[in-house]
Length: 287
Image 1: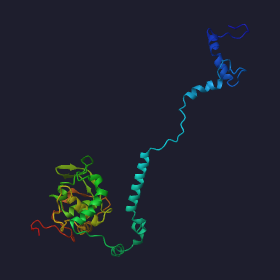
Image 2: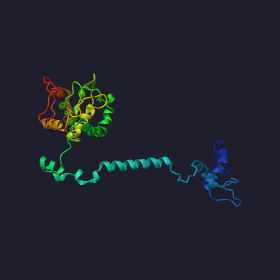
Image 3: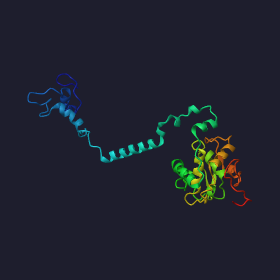
Image 4: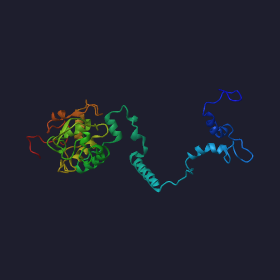
């Protein structure tokens, strides 16, 4: 079908649709040309450009200046962190001395020559002195796992408080020295419960007198009373040094931990050669 001009006639109803949309088509086809009275594209009283942008403008957030004041508590937190960081660095950097952190100058020297340059390690000889050393090391290294001596059964960490391996029937200076020097590959039974965690080695991180201090600390903390005589600690630096010398083929970097069976193979009254004080023999009375 064609209209009066010979053009194809629109389908029924299409003419009314075009008539309804014509004002909008005019706006889209000529959005910026205004008539004399300010109307746009046949829609009285509407600026075509602003009309097309109305939808977008409605979606924008309210303008903000972006300079809101910082809460006072934020300043306080940052000040506290800076203060703590400064105190920590000041207490643990040894004044950034090269000879503390870089001892390449000692490479190739004998142990005796190194000891002469560095000076001997401290050698605490009383329970109180060893506990002072051990308390600091325990707090920095051991407490994250062993807590206040209770351990963490969910992570396979056995308790130290009341443990037979610390100050009971399974405890001995030789056994405890090896546990800290080389680490412990569990399972191990403590207070009737089996634990399957992994005790890390401390033979590289700690010196002999520090290991002796930690052992003495846990033997005499909480409910443990391992060394009743302050003048006679069971574990001193010489005890740990003797264990290290006896096991010198074993690496202290954690790759060769001891096991509970290996520890039990050492009699409770066994003492490594050179260890002083040595524990009394089972058939000898304590002096």
